[in-house]
Image 1 (spheres, rainbow, N blue to C red):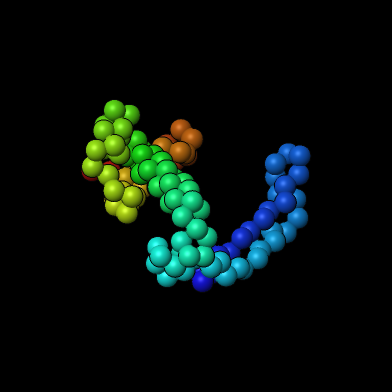
Image 2: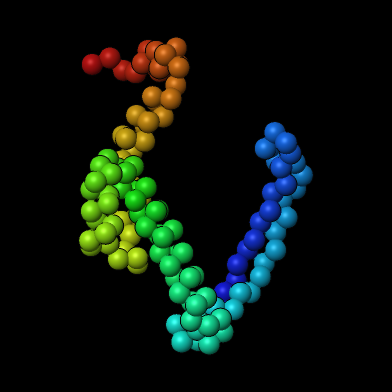
Length: 122
């Protein structure tokens, strides 16, 4: 069994939340290994589920690589030649300085000037 939380957020015509979210916690039967999964659902379902999960993982990994500046060609090459579905680069951690600069860049020119004026002069 695998506990899964399913959440539904009703939305209005404007696509904004319209009412409280509704949650259901469900124990989904997944077995303990491939053989028990196949016994529960059959080979075809096992294959379709695995293929779908692998496509989702590849898409996630591809987006991570594109986000760190890899070219579409580099992403395609990596995913088709050496990537394995269980291998993840994970999110690239930003330094505190990078986080600060990202936040600073989102401020208006006036806000940036106000912060600069408070900085100690060298």
